[in-house]
Amino acid sequence: MSLNGTYDDNNIFAKILRGEAAAVKVFENEDVLAFMDLFPQARGHLLVVPKKVRARNFLDLPAAHVEPLMAHVHKLAIAVEKALKPDGLTVVQFNGAPAGQTVFHLHFHIIPRYEGVALAGHGHANRADIPELQKIAAEIAAAL
Ligand code: AMP
View (cartoon, rainbow, N blue to C red):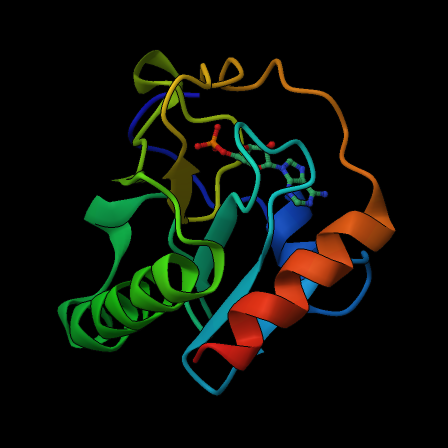
C-alpha cells in the first residue's frame, strides 16, 4: 500500500468503528475512538483513531479534524502516563507501508515504555489476553 490510494471500507479499524469487529475500548466520543492494541508492543499500547473520516493516513485527514484528533491523543497520552506510570512514552504514527503502516485507517499509537524492557516488534507482537487488556483499559479510562 502506497502513501496514496483509495480508502478501503473493509479495513479492520473501519469494522471496529462500525461495530462489526470487537475492540477493547478506552474512550469514545463523536470525534475519536481509543482502544487497546490487540498485539501490544508494550503493556498499555493504545490506539487512537478519528471517526467520521475516510482517512488512510495523516496526510488524508481534513484540516478541520486535526485539532480534535490531536487534542485527544494528548489527553489520552496523559491518562496513560497517569494510569500506568511508565518510564517513557512513545507517541507514533506511520504513513504508508514503506513507513511501517499495516492498517490503512489513520491511527496514532501511544506506547508506554518501561526501563529495561525491549519493545516488541511492530507487527510482530503476540496477541494480548483480552481480560488483561480490559483491566488496563479500565485503568486508563479511570485516569481520564
Ligand atoms: P500500523 O502498523 O501503524 O498500521 O498499526 C496497526 C496496529 O493495529 C498494530 O499495532 C496492530 O497490532 C494493531 N491491530 C491490528 N489488528 C487489530 C485489532 N483487531 N484490534 C486492535 N489492534 C489491532
